[in-house]
Image 1 (cartoon, rainbow, N blue to C red):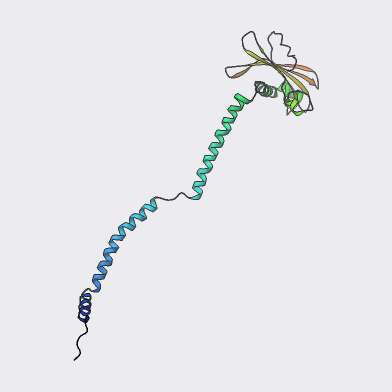
Image 2 (cartoon, helix red, strand yellow; image 1 turned 120 degrees about the horizontal axis):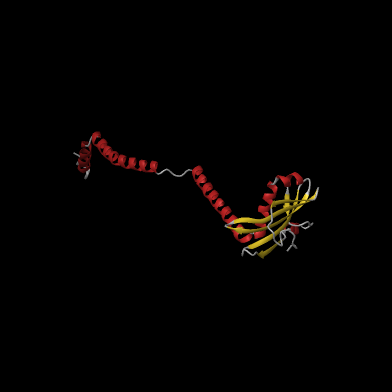
Amino acid sequence: MTSPQPGSSVRRTFAAESGKDGPGDGRKGADSVAEFQDPEEEALSTYFHKQKPVGVVEGTSYGLLIVAGLGVALVAAWAVVKELLLEPAEYRYFNEALEKVREDPRVTVRLGQPISGYGQEAQSRSTRQRIPHKVYNAQDGKQHTLLQFQLRGPAGHATVHADCYVEGGEVVYTYLIVDVIRPVPQRIMLIQPAASPAASGAFSPA
């Protein structure tokens, strides 16, 4: 008669006890794990759906808006600096006087359109851009600028004489005269001068 091998009874006992756990007990364990995982996965899914990443197009749009805003601010700042610090007063007077004479029909009918303005008759570009002027202190205590520049249109040529100053941030003219040289010499008084030594509009260019 063969004697049982050592340990065989232990294996049989373990197998028997293991066999007691039916398929239902395995499913119960899996169900417990699933019940634990489902709420966690649902919470993570909800979180990541709420925290949507910024798309490439949306991010690019924000970047373009910021760049455009900075560009507008820089242009505005440059205009202020140019007017207050870099642009001489005579060029401001020149630009405003030029606009006034361009709008006057008595000037446009004689010179034609468009009308260009420049400082002096010369071949050199820098000399043409230089505006002849003279600064003096008037009896009213204000600092005046005598201005002289040239006009040219398709039909003629003229010289502009002006006496102006700034008051309350605006340019005020003591007089503004256009002397038409061609086609027919003629003086046009846009702003009538008061009686003064400079009323003729003639001065030696600075």
